[in-house]
Structure formats: C-alpha cells, structure tokens
Image 1 (cartoon, rainbow over the protein chains, first blue to last red):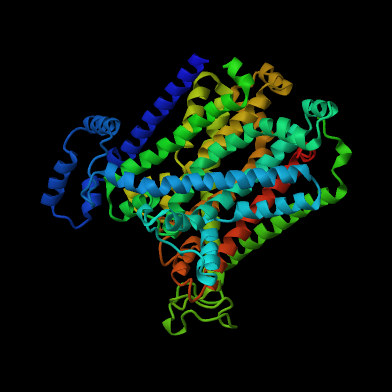
Image 2: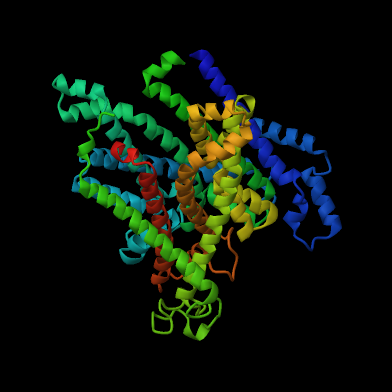
Length: 315
Length: 284
C-alpha cells in the first residue's frame, strides 16, 4: 500500500517536472526571441538587449531553466513584465475567482449528473429516460461559452435578475460575489453534467445487472435500498474517472467562460498576458494550470482506493 | 451477459437508428453548405455595408446583417467551411500520429509501449486551450496555429484507443497464424490489425471531429483562432456578444450552427458504433 502510494507520487512528480520542461522549451528555447515578442517588431536593438539582460536571456538555457524551477519551488514566480508586480501576487488575486468558480461548477455538475443519470437508469426505456438522454445528447453538443451567452440573454438582458458580467470582489460581500459567479458556474456545470449524466446512467445500468445486486434484492432489500447501498458505490468508479478526465476540460472552459463574463480570474489573466506579450505570466499560469490537471488526475487515482476497498488490498 | 436480449423493445432500436439517420442528415447538410459556400453564397460574406447594419431578416439578407452590415447567412455558410477544414485537419493530425503511435506500442510492447503511453498520458495534461495559448504566445494567433493545437490534443485520444484495440487483436489466433506464415510485425499491423480496428477508429474520428469543431469555436471566440475578416462561428459569437442588448438574434444563429454540426456528428458516431458492433446495443 505504502509502496503503491510512493510509486504513484513519484510518477506525479516526474510528470510535473516534464510539464515544466515542455513549457520552458516551447516558450524559451524554440526559435523566437522572447524579448522581441514582448517589445514588438519595431523595437530598437538597444532596448531588446536591455530586456534580454533583464530576463536573463544572455545566460545559457539550462541555467535559466534551473533558476525558473528553483524559483517555483520557493514560490517565487518572477516579475510580471507589464504589471511590474510579482506574478505570485497576481496569480494569488486571480485564484480567488477561479478556484471558487471551478469548485462551484464541479459540485453543481456532479449533483446534476448523478441525479439525472440515476433517474434515467432507474427508469430505463421509459419516457423519463428518453427525455434525459435526448437533453444530454443535445447538451454534449452545446459550447459552454454559447450557453453562457444564452444565460446572459435570459437572466441579465430579459429578466434582469443577475449581472451580465464583472466581479465586485469578495470584499463587496458574499451575496454580490456569489451572485456574479452564479451564471458562469451554471454555464460550465450544465454542459459538463450532460456528458457525466450519460456515463452515470450507463454505469448504473451495468451494475444493476450484476449478480450481487440480485442477491441484495433476493435478501429482501427494496429496489431503492439496493440502488443506494449497492449500486451507487460501484457505479462511482467510472463516474469519478470521467470527472477527473473532465477536469482539464473544465479548466479550459473556465478560461473561456471567464472571458465571456469578464471575470478577473486566471483565464482572463493568461488571455490578457497573451495580448500584452507578457511571457513570464503566460509561462507561470500555463504551468500552474497543467500542474492542477496533473494533480487532479493523481487525486482521482487515490480516490479509487477510498471508493473501492478491493483495490486497497491489491495495492 | 446478464441483460435479457428481448428486453430492448423494437421501438428503442428504431429510435437509435433514427439517431443515426438524423446524425447523417445533419452532417450531410453541414458538409453540403460548406461545399456550396465555396462557389456560392447569397451575398458576400465579407462585404461591409454600414448603411444596412443590424438589419432584420429580409429577402436580400435571409438572417439579417451584423454590425458592419455583413450578410449573416453568408457568414455562417463560410463559417461551416471553416469548421469542416478545422475538423478534417485536426482529426487527420490526431489519427496520423496517434494511431501510428498506438499501433507501434501494441506491436512492440515493452519499453516502447510504456514510453509512448506515458507520453500520451502527459499530453492529456495540456487541454487544447492550453496548448493553443502556448503556441499562440510563441507564434501569434491564427487559424493554422489553433488547428495545430487541437490536432496535438487529439493525438493521445487516438493513441490510447488504437493501442487498446490493437492489443486485443494481437492475441487472436489468426495473428498467430500470420506470424507462423512468416509475416513481420509491420506487415501484420497493416494487413491484419488495422483493418480490424478501423471501424472503431471511424467512430472515434467522427466524435473527435465534433470535439474539434467545439474547440476551434472556443479558440476563435477568444480571438486565438481564425482571424478577421475570415468568418468563423466562434468569432461571430464573440462579435455578437457586444450587441446582445440590441440584436440578441446575432448571438443565436452561430451557436445553433455549432450545436447542429456537433450534434449531427455525435449522433452519427453513436449510430455507427451500434451498426458496427450490435453487441453493444444490448449492454447499454
């Protein structure tokens, strides 16, 4: 068990290290001068030279890589070129938007998907099931940013209940802040839930056909009790797997949806960094997002052990 | 198999075939529109006519005009062409590299397989938007760069699928017969393994085609994909958002186009899966 955990953790660290290498190589080693990217085509040679010195580009690539990774380990992400503040500070501020957004959407989509999937599986072949399957089939095809725009149309333009974008900050109070995160979370969650509900349904249907479920029923458990006590726990494995895989899609969705609603999160930060050619911010934020995806997949591996005791003894 | 075969009523089987038909029809429609737009659109898709901006639908402008007075119907038609291009190229990159890696991994086994599959796992950590951001930061935004990013994102999906399927084929008796007959790994892969997993790959390619269209729309919405003046569904949506309060219909059409195209491809993929492998129908 311990060996298994250590092995997994080592794998996690190696993957993170590989991610730093990829980001670094793509942005700093491949042809293209970061200083020229930042300053534009018409920059004077002297200013380019000055900036190259400031970025430390006159040092060899291996040294720069080690300095960057060393800084990351210490929590020093470097200085943003455009904002002239530490990137760590910028990222910290933006996380206060992106983390709640991702958490609320994940919870919402999980609840929605489980409810719909279990309902459809329990009513297999009946109108309720066909209805759920039709709606989710449609949901899979809907781009989250378009769904976001539709939500803005309904709740902000026509009904006027919720703001069409922007974020007042947590200091403005919990109410207004959560209110402005409601539509963005909903637009991410509903589209995610469509995929997840279909997976849940398929998993529950498969488990319902297993012998141990029949045994549970034969022992006098009601259908409902068998479903909740025996089926759900077993069906959770594929559902959690897909949730983990979907997390990277969710994060990608966050980048887009933050831009739809003008939310000052990580997605908006990295997007603005692109328009401003702020390579240092891009490098750090892209790495951070990749590490989060890797970490979530690692966490999903561990979650299996919690869900399925059989894996524990095997591990 | 513990599910009783007779359980699935004919009604449901027809429903599923109806899905295939609807999917094929929708896909054919989008392809047709894309092809027609190559030679004909009702109006020019890029001609600016500010005097008639934000016009309501009429005989001259079937779906009205946008804030520059451009014909929305024509822009959507050219947008279909754009989405098809993206799908074809991105899926080709994914199939070309991914399937080759997956087949090689299954044929060689050992450390080659381990290395290729770890690489595929790793690529999963970079969703299309992230790799697009990296590529854009380096090379600047553009249609080609966004397609490249989506294509790279497709590679691991095909690598994993084809490796898993190919391994199932490699243990079969007819492969053993082929090896006894003296065929090499490459020849067996091309002559026996690939044809046996082709239907699976076709289904996955159909699904990934839809995913690619969604991803490109997202990137173009962010301004990282197709650049003006070339119309794309994602960018049209972005521009429409500015006029949400005065002309909400402009935000409806491109989104509907995306949904119809992706829905068609998904239904087609699911339907093809049922046709290729009827055993799966019972299990669902």
